[in-house]
Length: 181
Ligand SMILES: [Zn+2]
Image (cartoon, rainbow, N blue to C red; front, side, top):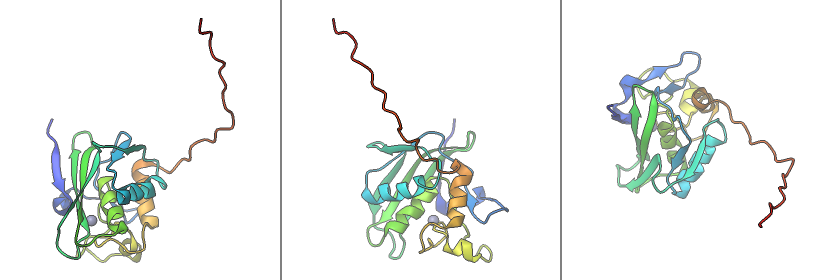
């Protein structure tokens, strides 16, 4: 089985445009609970996506599905994501977030994490006229500065379904100790 290793910068051929919404998906998704690196910004960014979708939280791992590395990129570039997906099964295999040591902020982490979860740019620069909703999405090509908007929520829920809060523990089951004889 061959794995497709792709950078978001060279990923345009794989875009699929959902005409009912303005968001764009790569066509790949995680099919198991996704683990991620322990960088506090990445943990915060993941929680933001987990809190609005049915994505399964695999927690922080020392060998995460979504890794992160700090490196010096050009000034003004927050970072980029390197996706590793299986085009046959449609399953995301791994992803690496590269964050700029010269400049980055939490929204850059949220944007790159969105790529790692299967979200492409809501509208590429110069591709066509972008709607206001697309330009303000965190998944806009230049990373909307207003945070996650309704277009981003529709995108992540198209992949993983809506967020379902855990059922409250109304009852605590008490099991008496078994005989230790
Ligand atoms: Zn991007």
